[in-house]
Amino acid sequence: MNDLLMFFAIPFAVVVISIVLEKLIKCPYLVAAIIFSIFLVIGIATSNTTLLIAGVVYMVISFVAAYLTMVICKILKNNRYNISSVLNTNNLNGTQVFDTNNVFTTNENLNNTRNRRPFCNRNR
Image (cartoon, rainbow, N blue to C red; front, side):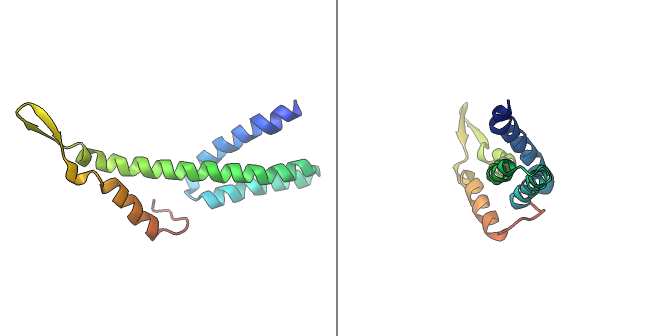
């Protein structure tokens, strides 16, 4: 039972909590630090060295989940604003033609925002 808890239940809870914290805090580094500090306090309080070692692994899992959440939210946010310009259709003799001038605006916006925010920022 203890192995199931360590390998399945706690990592799943860490991923869910990391996604929620990422949506609130908007900083994957801080989310990973919070998860690590929680497991560090619990490990020291129970004097369980296995939990201390697992805390490092959970911290990495937390960072990956928070970072992926940040990237997915950023892509969805940019696509939400550019989807109308990408799928701007014109009716020419009953056929729909896509506007190819605005197809690459999503990638350009991602490259521009990546260079302006090197660390955590509330204005994402």
